[in-house]
Image (cartoon, rainbow, N blue to C red; front, side, top):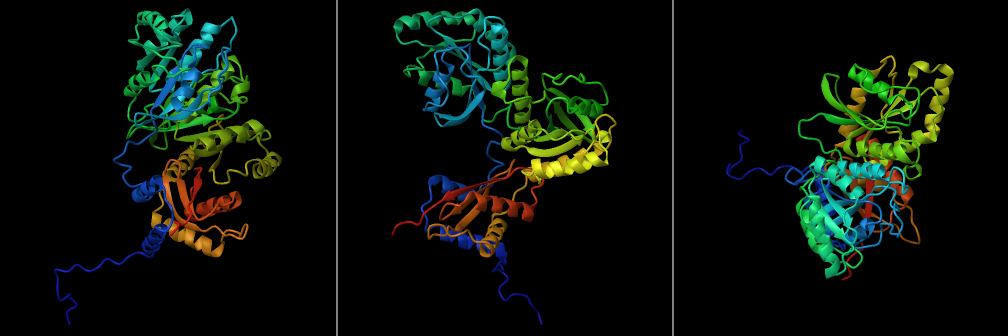
Length: 496
């Protein structure tokens, strides 16, 4: 007896996977709720589809650079449309490098307000140059702000030399130009050799639109400097991080097989990140040794200030961070702060307990207790016990880094995710609060690197329940070595 269908022209229906049926049913239910255009776009794209066709990588970075008190922060506030950057008529108010999301003429980009120099008579020019150099390193394009009522100063000309060497596109801004008289003075800035000066009044908004039009035209579609953007086929980028004197430079030298970096018992020998192409585990990697993070950035001064910022720069450009912790001494607050910085940055994470050859059984016992107490926030991070001095277990770094990167780039199919969420909600529903019980409606993975999940719910989900969801996501799907982010969008039912 033949089992051939009577009409071979009619294709047999493809059986649906149970997860897909769950997803389809939940999507239909979402039609009863008020969804924003952004919600609809996220759901239609499934958070991930079409990524190959869209620009991949971080938004382009536009840095606002200039000497103290020329109105950089006022201009930043004008561009972002709200008063966020601190403005005061005193040089050097902006101590940190601060980034803001911005949009102009339909272009999204990251706007960086710069500061950090010390307003002292001695060494001012050097400090200005250091700060400008840092901003330029992190930017795809630069808005160089000059006081149009004063003209170019010696400090301005020093920054101009850096800009020319960098090759970055520059939009020259002549600020504090409130009328025709100042506008005539601003034309003298042609002499800087940076092209047309754009006269603006950041305080009153005069001319800022035209200046922004010019600046945005210089930005690439995707940043070439930040967020771990790595050329296709290029080596994976690994940042070596840790507090001073934990052995970062010793590790880089051991991996490189040469005395590539100065090593000295004095903490803080390394000031600038040093890149090194290294063959490890049969593959090529780009390692970056960084200056130790000493204190909170705004409390540091002079060279330490720039060392801390350059460490942040290395992290921003990395895909994965290997944080070194000195296993021979108690875990310090600075160790915890470095790890928190990595988690907040969204980079993959491996923790390497260095100087293992200097630990005895008693110290190892206490170290385990310290890890349980002090590093409770990262039980998911791969751990490697190494000795940069002797080279012990250095080969274990590669599988740990591979695991972290694989988790960092992991995608969960929407159907599988919602089947998982459904089983969680059935077994552990959200507690009733105020006579109401919020319900999870639908979930989708919005992005990778790191994995970010968006959950639509009928009401506010408490922080404890969100942490519970994150913990169960890790138990179900792994995510070893990567932070994950779970955000909730509360949507109410449409009123009939």
